[in-house]
Image (tube, rainbow over all chains, first blue to last red):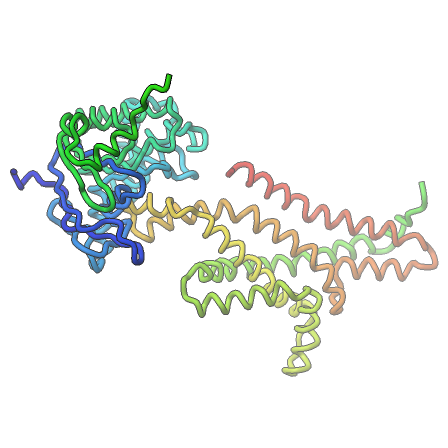
Amino acid sequence: MDTSQILLEIDHLTKKFGDQTILQDVSFQVRKGEVIVIIGPSGCGKSTMLRCINALEEIQGGEIRVDGETVNAAGGNVRSADLARLRQKIGMVFQSYDLFPHLTVLDNITIAPLKVQKRNKAEIEQEAMQWLERVGLADKAKSFPRELSGGQKQRVAIVRALCMHPEVLLFDEVTAALDPEMVREVLDVMLDLAKQERTMLIVTHEMAFARAVADRVLFIDSGNIVEEGKPADFFTHPATERAQKFLHTFEFEAVK
Amino acid sequence: MPDLGLEVLFKGKNAVRLLGGLWIALRISLISVLISIPLGILLGALMTWKNPVMRAILRVYLEFIRIMPQLVLLFLVYFGTTRAFGWDLSGEVASVIVFSLWGTAEMSDLVRGALQSIPVHQYESAAALGMNRVQTYLYIIIPQTIRRLIPLSINLITRMIKTTSLILMIGVVEVLKVAQQIIEANRMASPNAAFGIYLTVFILYFLACWPISLLAKYLEKRWK
C-alpha cells in the first residue's frame, strides 16, 4: 500500500462511556479518494466512531491522525487551536442536519468559511451558490432552515461541510431521520461526490446505496471491526456468521 | 352614565401630578431594569457552570428572592436594614435596590433557561466546522440565546412596572399614591372620584405596559 496516500489513520482506538466499552482497539486507514461505508447493528459504536474522528468525543485509548497530525488522542492533549485547524480538514454531516436556525441557508454555508477561514465574502458566496445550484436548492438561498424539508436541510448541511474544503467527509446516518421519498435526493448528492473521488466515511443503513457507493465496507459489531471487504464480496458472500446474520435482517421471506 | 368624578382630574394640577407619579414608577423600574439585565446575564451564565459551590449560592439567592413576596423585601430593606445598619435610605433608593435584586434573580433564571435550551448539536455543528469557543458563542450560541431571551425579558420589564404599585407602602409617592391623595383631597366635593381616578391610573399603567407587550409579541413572531 502506498502510505503517502493515507489521509486518515485510526490507530488502536478505544472509546468508553463510563465502564461500558463502545469501541475496542479499532484500527483502519483511509486513503485519499476512498469511500468507506461503515455498517453494523444499532448501538455497535459506528456513529460514536465518526464522532471520535473529529474529536467530538474524548477517547480512552489510541490515536486518530489526519494528514499525519494527531486530531484526537487518549489523554486529550491536542491544543484547541490545532483542533480547530484540523477539524477544518474533516467535514461532518449529522443525522439531525443541525443547521443554525437563526441564519439563512446562504449564511449557514458561508459563516464558517468567512469567520474561521477568513476567506473573501464574494468568492465564498459564489461557491456556495454554485453548490446550491448543483444540489437543486439555488432558489432557497435566502430561506431559513425552518422553511425547508428534511431532505433539503440535509443537502444544505452537506454543502455547508463542502464549502470548508475538507479533505475527508464524515456522514453520520444522514438519511436516518428522513421520510423515504427524501432519502433518494440526499443519497444522489453523495453518489455525485463519490464520483468526484472525494474521500468519504459513511455510516448508513441503506444497504443498496452502500453497495453502490463504497470502495470498501467495514462491518462493525460490539465495538470491533468484524469484517471488511469490497462491497461486491461483502454483500454477496459475507465471510463471518455475524455479518450474514446482520445482512439477513434486511431481507424478507414471502409469507403468502 | 354614573358620575365618575372625572372632573377632579382637571382640577388644579391633578393630571400633571398623576403623570409625575407615573414617571416616578417608570423611572424606578427602568433604573432597576438597566441594573438587572447585565447582572442577570452574568449570573445566568454563571448558573450554567458546572461548579457546584457557585451553583448552590446562585440557587439559594434565586429561591430566596422568589419565595419572598416583593412587599416583604421592600419592608426588609427599607425598615429592616436601615434600623439594623443605621444607614439612611430614601424610599426610592430602597425600591431600586429591591427591584434590582428581584430583577437580577428573575433575569438570571431566564438567561440560564435560554442558554440551556440551545441544543448540544449546535455547539457540535459549530465545532465540526472548525469554530473555536469564542466564535461558537459569538456567531452561533449568543444570537440564538438573545432571540429566545428578548420576549421573556420584556415581559419581566412589564411585571416590574406593575409591581412598583407596592412601593407606596414604603412612602414613595408614585402614581397610585398620588391617586389616593387626590381622592382623599376631594372626598367631600367629588365622593365618586375614586372610580374615575383609579380608572385613569389603570389606563396609565396600560399605556405604559401595552406597547412593551406588543413589542415582545412582535419579536417573538419574527424570530420564531
